Length: 276
Image (cartoon, rainbow, N blue to C red; front, top):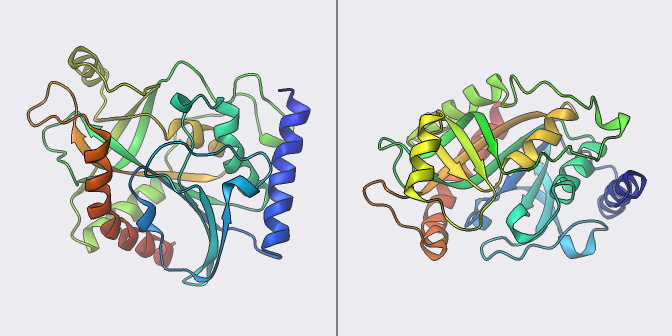
């Protein structure tokens, strides 16, 4: 795909959503990860648009990802929720994964919160616990900005020193505390997947300073930061990583635990909207 075609797709997607929701400018956006379909915050006047109807949007193929864009208001703010995401391991190009985030920014998005299921590489981060991401290590083998640069996106070489906005991190941790939900900060290691990691890989990732590991987040956070969107990430622990006591590597178990965690996450995200 050429860059001009890519930009045209982003503009077409933004225009389509504007047509379906006239005068809607998203102030806050959420990307909901595996098993979190029921974590959508309560929204007034909600409108739902299937991804399959939006020009340029890929289709979700992973169980637990609904594939819907939900628009509405909460606590006086316009909120956009991506109910389901796209993954590199599904065969999607990195630029395609970034397209929905870029389209929302074209519509006016200022703040993005990405959620995801992760494996814990630290004994103190247990299944069901939340981790507010403070930084990441990209081991996916690709960068979502590669070969698809346009001046209107921002600089070709964005500074990722504060990829995860310090203010959003504090607000997320505070929201978790108020909900009495176990949460701490940690470093996210992004891998390509879809196979789970080996015990040797987990030992290496821990040595690099990683706390949790997953197969998403980075392809959305990097382009969002390039475009000047304040970005945060809140992950939930679905399993202990390979080689650690209690390790379980099964996507069905991830979805089952996700359904139980979704209500807590829904409350935390609602609290975050209120305090932004």
